[in-house]
Length: 375
Ligand SMILES: Cc1cc2nc3c(=O)[nH]c(=O)nc-3n(C[C@H](O)[C@H](O)[C@H](O)COP(=O)(O)OP(=O)(O)OC[C@H]3O[C@@H](n4cnc5c(N)ncnc54)[C@H](O)[C@@H]3O)c2cc1C
Image (cartoon, rainbow, N blue to C red; front, side, top):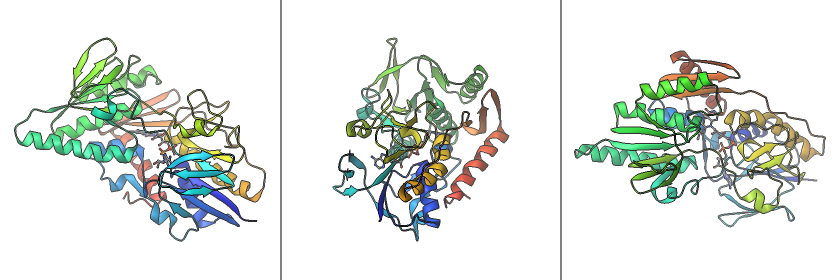
C-alpha cells in the first residue's frame, strides 16, 4: 500500500531529507513538500551578506536543483491549519493536502508582534525573505538621503543574542564602505550574549567597541516612528530598527492540539515523533526534545536531518524507528563584522581572522553540499 508523506518547510533538517530522497526515494511513498519559498536562505551567512562579504546568491540554496529528477511534488504555500483527526493540512493558498505521516521543519515563527510598534516601524529578522527585501530598501533610502546631504542614519538592532550581535556588527562594517549609518545595539538587561561565558562576552564587547557600535544594556519595550522606548524610561532616536529577539513558536501546533512545551514548541521524543501524535515528526527550531533541552540553533536542526531521513524511511515502511539524542555541545562561530570571528565550543573560546576563514570554509562547504552556488 502506498503511504503519503507530507514534508512541511524546507528548513535545515528537511534539506537533508530532500537530498537523500532524491538519490534514493522510499518505495511506495507519495511525497509532497509544502514550502512558501523556492529557496532556503542560510542564516549563518546572512550577517556576511549584510557586511558585504557575500552576495545573496552565496547565501541561498535554490530548491529546484535539489529536487530535479526527484519524485517529490512541491506545493508553494504556507501551512495554515493542521487537522490531526482527518490528517489534513490546509494552506494559505487554498490547497488541502492529506497525509499518513507528516514531518514539520518550519523553524521559528515570524515575530511581527515581538515588540509593540514593530509591524509599523521596524524590521523583523524573520521571515528572513522579508527581512532581505526590507533591508535592501532601507539601504537604498539611506543612500538616497546621503546623496542629498542628509546625516548618517541611526540604525538600532534590538536583541543581544548571537543573531542580534552579528547583525549589528555586520551593519557597522558595511557602513564603513557604504551607506552612512551609526549603529546601536539594545541588548536587553542581561547584556550581550548572556548565555555565553564571560570570556566570550568580553570578546563581544571588544568587537562592539572596535566597530563603534553603541551598546545599551536595557530592554526595548516599544518602537515608535523614529524612536526606541526603553524599559527604564529612556527613549533612543532611531531611524531604522531591526528586531532580532530570538525564536518564538508558531501558533499552528498548539492550535492543532499537538503537545507543545511551555514556550509552544512541538514536544518530540527521541524518535523525533510528537509525544501526542505518533504520526507527526518534527525537527529543528519548531521542536523540543523532551528530556534534552537545547538552544534554538541551526546546528541542531542540521544534525537532526540524517536521523530524520532514516526515521521517515522506517515509518513509511512500518519498521521500528531509531533513537536520536541531540548532541550536548555545539560549535558557535560568531562573525564580528570584519572578516574576523569568535569560536565557542563548551568552555573553549578563541577569536581571530583565521576563525572567520574557518567559518567561511565550513559555511561554503555546507552550501555546496546542497547545490548552492557558494564558490
Ligand atoms: C541572523 C541570524 C544568524 C544565525 N546564525 C546562526 C549560526 O551561525 N549558526 C546556527 O547554528 N544558527 C544560527 N542562527 C539560528 C538559525 O537560523 C536557526 O536555528 C535555524 O534556521 C533553524 O533551522 P530550522 O530548520 O528549524 O528552520 P528554518 O531554517 O527557519 O527553516 C524553516 C523553513 O520553514 C518555512 N516555513 C515557516 N513557516 C511555514 C509554514 N507555515 N508552512 C510552510 N513552511 C513554513 C520557512 O520559510 C523556512 O524556509 C541564526 C539566526 C539568525 C536570525
